[in-house]
Image (cartoon, rainbow, N blue to C red; front, top):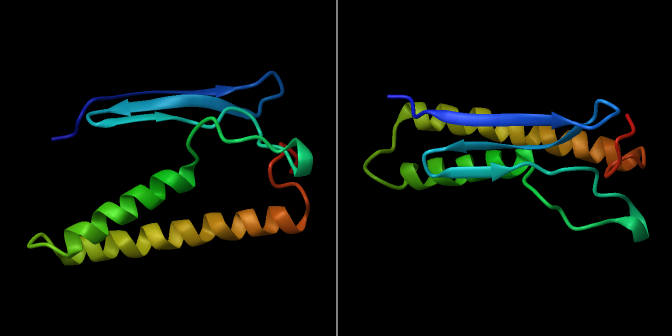
Length: 106
């Protein structure tokens, strides 16, 4: 049975992602609001990133796979989540190489 959830995603005045939240049974995510900046102007995160949520799901499924609940479906889900994590890391690497990571620049 699917748990009820509540979510809201915000944009700033320029149409950039600007925080929001996701809540469900046992989950309360506050999304990062604003860019982190670069160099001396870099700030600490004030919320979660998609990568954090993917990593949490990977960790939980790995835990299941060490238990009597290990199954092919979990294995396949892990493959897809790991692929998603790799894509997000590739995106970050590309943005770092172009010196736009931590900004709202494309």
